[in-house]
Picture 1 (cartoon, rainbow, N blue to C red):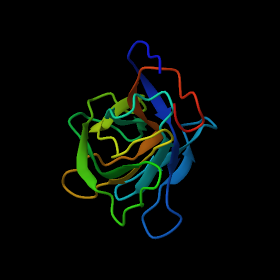
Picture 2 (cartoon, helix red, strand yellow):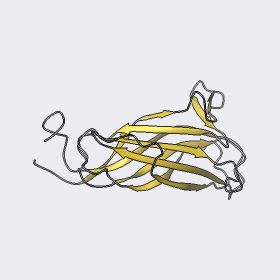
Picture 3 (cartoon, one colour):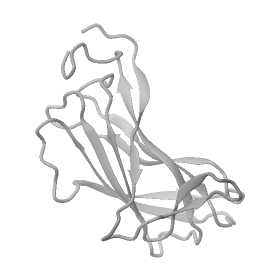
Picture 4 (cartoon, rainbow, N blue to C red):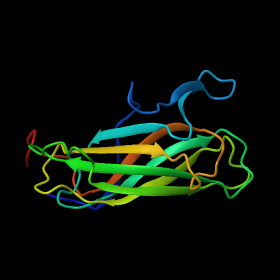
Length: 179
């Protein structure tokens, strides 16, 4: 395979909430517009999944996963949004795990004036590629906003999107599933 310069790209996927079994977000308009976004309150769960594109440099870790959001409530500064996460990255023939193996908590500190400000914040860094990685691998992450003393922000945040960045060194695969 011919390769070129190393770059980093986004892999866009789907944000979802559960229909039952966990606390779910509510869809509401942003301010007085007709733009509707999920509003995440304490205890709400949401997920993201994306297929990693064929331009990814195989057998290399992805850079990470981050969210795009707007704090909705007033922010005086120093408040923290705490998000528990668990993720997995699967390739062809992998078995979906009963529990996601990679876990942690992301802490997002807000500053005065952040209300309705468009923010991009890292949730996970250095996503380890799956053993035997091939094209069309999938990244899955579940996220739950904490409802305890670690999350000190009283307001909700409107979730615009999330994405995973990954290194690339070519335009794609020559064949549908392989080079």
